[in-house]
Image (cartoon, rainbow, N blue to C red):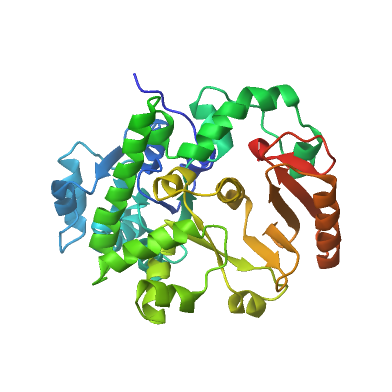
Length: 395
């Protein structure tokens, strides 16, 4: 029997059951969106509920009526009876974007609560804003962070509420217990299907399948790119430069396409959750937009499957994955000068190190205080009891 584990988003989505608005859950393929929505579906006590997979053409046909009132008659044939509280779950909405108008109609006229999932924000974010304005909330699901990874490994730990507590409450015993699991997380990442596999070869195979699926289903079906080989080359180039600033002109020259094409590729990769681009820290938005962006991949397992990545960069990518849910991230770097890897919500600085030292702490303190940051921490892969150090495992 397959175990079903709660994600951090589970409690938020369960609360949505009683809130009158359309819920959209988006994220990359195979991050666990369908499983999470099934969890929510199972917690609804109303008998008036149905879960439909839109990758099934028969389910798509239900919504192809010109008279939207007939859609309810079609769903009744499947055993759905609208009640005082009615729920329709539609999985993989990106394969049938024309369904948005019927969804809006049924929500407005019959007060049906919809939960929708889709694997690419490239479509979803362009599709929903105007047609569902004021009626929807969007949640994003990513591969597991390390805390969720431990839950999937049956090693749940007590939640630590804030960064200050994480720096103060370091535990060498807990660190040693979880050391090998953190190494596994760095090597194979946080896609649920990979995490639950115990065999290393199977883990590698699942990662390969995830990348193939992304290339075949998202890139080929959603994007109108003529030279897919160039896009593949860009992906490999970005993997080798993770955690580094990207120079568009240089990339354009290396892969042999125009700057405009590089921008369109990056836009697609970011909107479909394969990469994230982090802007430089600035107290005003104009400064952010002008600076070069740093690139991170969605998962360290996928990153490792694309090439040999230096240990420090792999750690930095994992830290990014564990911090991104806490808010907006920037980086700070003076021209060929001191830097801070991540600044969270323009208030808290984080510098990532394999092993934190006192001199690292003094450098960080000097830069952070000059920038007026409220808090700042070193993130260390190795155990350190220095003040102001958070263990990478504890993020």
